[in-house]
Amino acid sequence: MLDDKKVLFSGMQATGSLTLGNYLGALKNWVKLSDDYQCFYSVVDMHSITVRQDPATLRKRARALMILYIAAGIDPEKAVIYFQSHVSAHAELAWILDCYTYMGEMNRMTQFKDKSAKHADNINVGLFAYPVLMAADILLYQTDLVPVGIDQMQHLEICRDIAMRFNNIYGPTFTIPEAYIGKVGAKIMSLQDPTKKMSKSDENPNASIYLMDDPDTIRRKFKRAVTDSEACICYRDEQPGIKNLLDIYCACTGTSTEDAVRAFDGRGYGELKEAVGESVVAVLEPLQKRCEELTKEKSYIDGIIKANAEKAAYYANKTLRKVQRKIGFPDRIR
Ligand code: TYM
Image: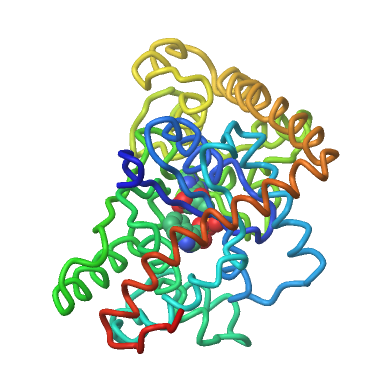
């Protein structure tokens, strides 16, 4: 609880090109929730280096992501948006929590298994300990709520386990966070294989809608989206392609699933694809324009980066000092 408001934390990696999944599964909910909570939204650049990055590209993407947060409607005067690497408490708490996390717990993480299969030449310790850094991110701010897509649930569970373990040993230290999974859009699937999640690392560019795709590309990708031969617009697991299109439509337009199914009753897949494409263009086009405008406002963005990193560090250090005291690190001499 900060200033009588509950605390919300979330983060996004500046790796690759963000997809519609990132927007509908996370960012859109961040904006929706930001009036009711004291929010911390981080560009988690320290997580990004678990996979090899080109330095200039990482720097550029990290700044573009910060701008995207603002363009999406997050008010940087109210929410604390900052680069993870600007607040050293993240690394310091992560090290401490590493010492309260078991190898067996990390071994079970499906994201580690997937990523180490994909990057077999670079299975580094950071990739293995990734969920502990994520736990540090969340616990530093005494977070009550963490809005994420379904793919992050396993990491959130381990964060809760680590926090409870620490609290059991040292007494109440961390707030135990809850996940917030949106009703629609929590798992946007690939347009080419709707049994797989839409991912920025997919090799087939037609599988994902990137947030910076132009309107024609968006329309074309939906036209090519894989469906089925049932010829029925129904919302059911047996038709994952159609279900995904309906999910995207509902998340972009705010329509309920029942209303969408009713509206498309008896219509063809072509019509559905077109309507979904238009609903996505209507969301992304203004977002892209706003990003373009904000990119030009260099000193305004620089000001936000500086002020918010200081704010984040203030709150993060409060928790870090408390933890350091509890585990027996010597007091600082003022
Ligand atoms: P990342 O950068 O992979 O994804 C950012 C957010 O987007 C959501 N997401 C999706 N939601 C629905 N459908 C999809 N296809 C889809 N793809 C991605 C993710 O669930 C996530 O919410 N480890 C995190 C970043 C992180 C973090 C944190 C999140 C670091 N520390 C602390 C919350 C709290 C990650 O790599 O997300």
